[in-house]
Amino acid sequence: MATARTPSPVSHLSVPVSEESNAVLSIVIAMLVCLVLAGLVVVYVAYPHRGEKMPATPWLGDALGKAADAVPVIDEDEADLLHSRSQ
Image 1 (tube, one colour):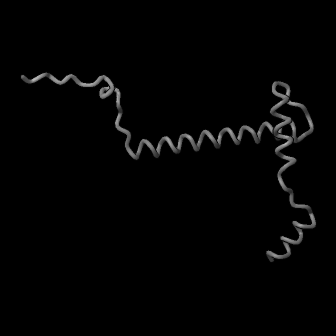
Image 2 (image 1 turned 90 degrees about the vertical axis):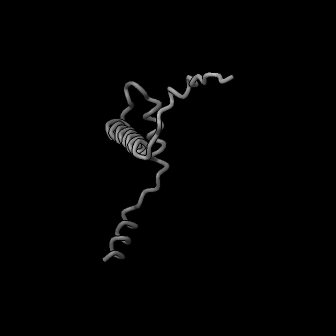
Image 3 (image 1 turned 30 degrees about the vertical axis):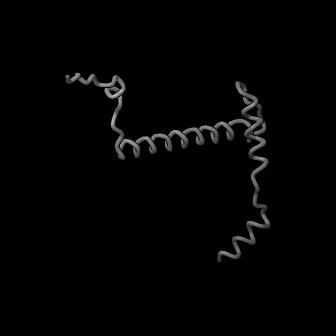
């Protein structure tokens, strides 16, 4: 006696994922990351870089200030040395 096969409810919900959709998803994620980083730069330049507190989120200003202080900076003497070596 043959029994009728009922399709699994999950099989109707599965969507085939192609390489093109993976590429589009990767581009969208990369663009969102770029927008977030650009927003952080704008916020940093608008407030902590000028020595002001951020009105809505002072903790973010403090974190950006600490991150900026942790980044190595090329002194003017080092910049002159690098400039003279490149010529």
